[in-house]
Length: 416
Ligand SMILES: *Cc1c(COP(=O)(O)O)cnc(C)c1O
Image (cartoon, rainbow, N blue to C red; front, side):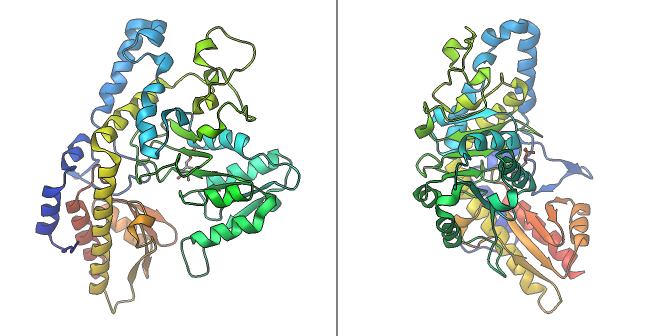
C-alpha cells in the first residue's frame, strides 16, 4: 500500500476501516479536555466502557444471592472461568481445554516451570533471553536455585549479535542444539518455531506471551508449544493487575506431571465431595489452585466479548497496516531532519510477520527530554532509558489519524 503523510489520507483510511466503530467502546484519558494519543496499550490497555456494567452485575448478584451466587448468579461463579475459555482459546490458537485463566502472570510462570522445568542428572539448563523482562529472569533464576543449582550454571542467556537488536531464529536453534542433553526447558518471550528444536534435544518449550496475547495471531496447539502464560492487562484491556492466563498442550493431560495442586484443579465432578487426594481434571485447569477471582474475570470477560466481536484475524490485518503507517511516518520525518545530528532508528523488524503492533525507536541524539515533550503535547508512549521510545498503535482503539497526529507532534518537537 502507498501511504501519504497527510490528514486527509489518514482520515480516508479511518473511513474505510471495518473496525472503526470499536474505538468508541473505550475510554481515552483526557488532557486539556482532549483525548490523548494513547500508544501505551502494550503496558496498560484502555478501559472498555462496558466493563463497569460487567463488574456491577457481579456485585449485584453478590448482593442478591450471597453464597448462592456460586450456582445462581447469571454466570455461576463456580464455573466462571469456563465462560472465558472459548475466547481465550481463540486468541492463542488452542483448544478450549488447553487454556485457563487464573492468578497473575509471574505466579503462573512459576506454576508452569514447576511442571515443565524438571532438571534431572545432566539435564538441568534453561534457555531464556538476556534482555527478558526482569520478572521472567527472577523466575527462571529462582527456579534453578530451588532445585539446588547455581543460576549462573543453569541459565543460558541468549543475546542478539553485536550491533543487532533482535535474536535470529538460527541463533536460537543453534543454542538449543549446543545445549543438547543438558537442556531441560526453553522459555522465550516471542512465539516462534523453536519448539521442534527443543523437543529434538528432549527439552520442553514454553513462552511468555505477555506482549503477544491480543496483539498477534497464534497457533499454540499446532505449533506444539508445551506451555505458555500471558497477562490480560496489556493488549487484553482487563485492567491493572487483572487475572492472567495459561496454556498447556493437551498431550500433557492425564500424565500426572509434578505440579503444585489446589482444590480448583480437582475434577469439578468430585471437587465438592472434598476428596482427600487430588484428582486433576484432564485440562489446563488442573493447574488452577483457587476459586475464581470473579470481579477481575468479569473485567476480562467484558474485553474478551469485544475481541470476539472484532475477530483477531481482522484486528491483525488492521494492525499490520496501522503499524506500517507509523513506520512510514517515522521514516518520512527522518528525511526531514536529515543533516541534523538526530535520527530515529526503528529497531523492530521491518517484516510485518516478525512484529506485533509496537515499534521500538531509538532516538539518536535525543534523550528523555523528547519523551517529556511528547507527554506534554498529549502523547502517551513508553520510554526505556537511555533513548528507546516504544509506540504501540492498537488496532482495537487507535486510528490512522492518531498515527498522523503523533507524527505531526514528533516532527514539531524535532524541528524546533
Ligand atoms: C508485563 C510482563 C510481566 C509482568 O508480570 P506480572 O506478574 O503481571 O506483574 C512479566 N513478564 C513479561 C514478559 C511482561 O511483559
